[in-house]
Image 1 (spheres, helix red, strand yellow):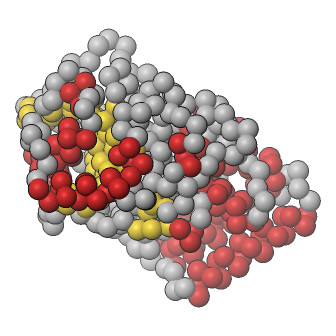
Image 2 (cartoon, helix red, strand yellow):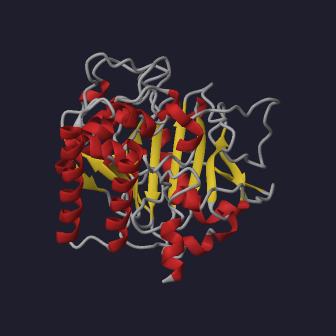
Length: 392
């Protein structure tokens, strides 16, 4: 009981802001050897993968992910439905134990440089060798510019606390290129052994007045997300998505100690994931002044705060008050989505506030009726109480 209490209390930081699992189990740069392992992609995917890709390329919900390979941003790009496309399968029931040498994991570690097709990374990643090779082979087959693109590896082995996702819970897109419209679409492959990512069968057109260089599309997704269109992906499948595929981390209803999540990104020549905090590859050499400070989009761009329904506000608040693993909401201050929502709500009268609070209570009652875990319900109650404290 004491352990449970300590875990729940740790969701509040010193500033009274809710924090998610990523804050309780931060990434630390692991001690990796400089003993290199090289991986080369196969010439072609296997026959079964080729068959699957052929079907995905014509399926209504996945074809945009393949049609837009190599394309830059264009008007209407978010009008297309994009669900994660299951392109292959990888199963290793002992993968968490086998990857123990990399600790909590690595963040966007460069493993392939422009101008070569082979990957180079520390020997500690040998248990993931076939998963990495398969992803590279698929991208080489699909992307004619594969040799010129960079490749990045993220592995997340951190524990998952009940009532939270392991990673970013709110709707978002990986490698989102809207703010850099001159860059080609990022290619992304994801895999996990449990608690799989959620996608959506809805499209999310940009709202009127949206400026892709100025506004945060993730806040639009969060507000407008259609719960009835949410779909689950499956564990142990390798999924291909792109920089405009909406998805979100699944909330766990129990503590998980052995989840492994892998994300492999391909970016065009010249696009570097060189944010301070990302994991250096000890098998590569980096130029001087390579690492730069990059703030999270939730504070770097403008977020939407307008809403038409209480549910829209609740979705934005639930996501915003959890913070973000790469740039904490407290550090963002007035630029945080949380604070922007609080300021917006202060312009409304008691009637709107009461409507939101009643809807929040109804939402929590619905969770109880659906037999959601006590941890998830407690987290939702904490968010409601935090909102009341901030507004009043």
